Each structure stands twice: as C-alpha cells, then as structure tokens.
Length: 457
Image 1 (spheres, helix red, strand yellow):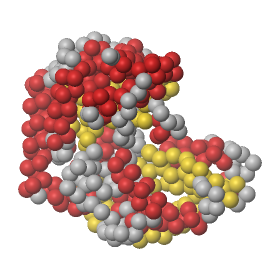
Image 2: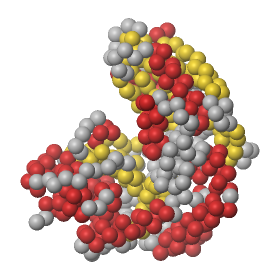
Image 3: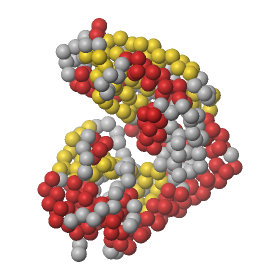
Image 4: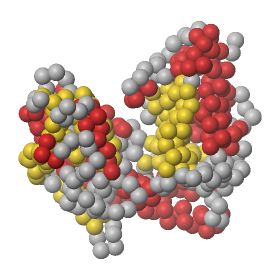
C-alpha cells in the first residue's frame, strides 16, 4: 500500500480541457474535537483492506447540481462537511514500523477545484475529474481525505465531483452524512466518535467484546470446510473479474417472498445465496464473511466514520426445504452479527494459529455484503414475475490484474445505479480459485430459486 501519491492532485493530461480553465479556491474550516490515537477497530478493518488490495478505496461520484446552485453554495457545502465531521478532518501519521495512527485536526484549509467545461459536456468533464481523483494516490499524511470539484459552464455550476477515501465512512455513515447535509443539521454530531471508540475499545468492556468475538471466530474457523469451492478455478488473463446481473424478476420475487414469509428481505437474500452456493460450490456448510454494519451497537448508529467489520457466518443448508434453510440462515446470521466487533490485530494472530493447524489451503477469502435499503412486502402476480425474466441481463464489465479477494459478493438495488425496480447482484472473483462459469451459475441460480419459491402454488 503506497502512502503517498505519485503525482500532485491537480496535475493531469487526460481531461478534455486545458489547464488555464481550472482554479483552486482555498476553503477554511474548523470544528469540534481533535487529538491523536491508534486506529479504531472499524478504521483498522478498512486500512487492512487498503493494504491487501493495494488501493485507497476512493468512493463518491459526479452529480448534477440543482438550478440556481452557486459557487458560494458549493464552498459552504464543503466547509460544512469538513467542519462538522471529524472523519473528514482526519489525517494519518505512521510509526517507524509502519503502523498508522489517526490525527483529528480542529481546523485547516482544503482546496475546492473549479473547472470550466467550455464547449465540452459538463458531465463528461466531471467524470474525467472523477477519474483523475480516483487514479491519483492519496497522501494520507499530507492530504485531507476528501477531494471536491465544481464543474461550470459559462460561469454557472452544473455538476459536483466528490471523492473521498473509504477511511472516512462506510455505507451507514454515508447515509447519515447525506441526510444531515441535505437538511444542514446544526445539532451536535451524534454517536461515539473515532477517538472515543478507541478509548472504549481499550476498556474492560471493549476487551470483553473483542475476546468473545474472537472465540466465536476461532470455533467457527476450526469447524468449517477448508475451502469455499470444491473444484479448481479457471485461470484467466486478466486474473480478476467482476460480473453483474440485473434482474427485475428477482426484485418482484423478493417482494412476494417478504409478503409470504413475513421475513426480512436481507435474510431471504442471504438464504438464496447460501442454498445456491452450497449447490454450485459443492461445499456445506457454506461459510462467508458478512459485512456487518455494527450500527445496532450503543453509540454507533449516527457515526460518520467506518464502524463496519466482517463477521464469520457458517450456514448448514444443503438438502433442506427453503423455509427451513431460511430459519437456519437467520439464526446463523444473528450469531455472526453479534460477534462482528473485535480487535483485528488479535484476530489475525488467532487466524494464523488456525492456518498453521489446518494447513495453507484454509480459505477465508469469501465475502457477502447486502447494501440495499428495505424491500416492501407485496403480493405479486406470478405471471408478472415470470414475464420479467427475459429482461435479466448478465455481463462481465471489468477484468483486471489488481489484487482483489477470491470472492466478494454484493447485493444492491437499482436506485444506486440510476434505475429502479430491479436488483443488481455483482460478484468479484479471482479466476484462479473461482471459475467465471460457477460465478455466473451462482447469480442465475439465486434468481431461479427466488422465482420458483415466489411462484410456487
């Protein structure tokens, strides 16, 4: 993981505009809270992913601005974010052995880039700025973890580009930030901030939580099968592939199943995954690392910052009816979530002990993350579900050689990608361990099972 960028943030030769057509406005900010300490458990989780995947995990995008939005509005928006949220005022320092520590600043200055699109499409200009931000390494010591630009045409702001590192927030924190910034919340920030989290994590209560979680991990690691897939991979060049399946039928079937079973859609989706994975992967129990929000824990619901960690979940579902599998998965997931908050450094020590005992083939590199909002319960005509099947699309849009986990499975609703009324399943695989054909069969198999269960008489 490189700590420093290879080129200054504002240097690029790839954008469809000239250097004189952009400028940087310094924005001063100040806020409550400052100090230095080790990383919190959630921050360590993200930092370890940075190191393993050799990326600073930029998140964000390019959004149109409403009519009447001025440059002063954008300046105040950036000032508001930097002043209100300590995670955005956090830089890192590194010990001689490379261990990162967080430094929360009380005040500072950040640059807001302003780019004149000229005759070019402002959105495409914004996307070019976004790519530059994403592709330029972040200096965690010298830079603020936020990069923002306003795209103008004829002096009128048209788009906002905002990119920040995942070390600033996880999905739950993003939702809090967007809701508060939309209403310009002025009440004191809620929740236990990162420096407070560290102090709690060192306390006897925090150490008890971590110890119980690690006992669960060790017991589960010693009981699950060695590998997530029984067969060999299908090595490809590039090595790492991303597959995407978009399905209206799956969304409709899920609504119907929520209405029929009165069970939360998250549990239903995870059951579809587990049962299909057992069949496609040829391994049972199905074990995966669930991304756990941890926002049900005291003091973490309203935090803008990373508090998510992974929890190890083992699901014995082979050869049982769907309703029984659903009950087993619900119980297994609840247990896993309970033990999804811990000291990552201690877990790595215990994991190394398990690997020494079980052998180098032992595989924990399989993740599951359901990022959707709530699914409404709805009685859906089975014919409507069946009629939607031809609209399902499967593609492999990204093939690359950058390091990624052996398998990372995400569930999103279409609203996150500019559409509605559909579910997006996407899967990142290391083809040396997971054949693309098996990954594709997993996605289609989940849709098929959902449709069959939802339309059964």
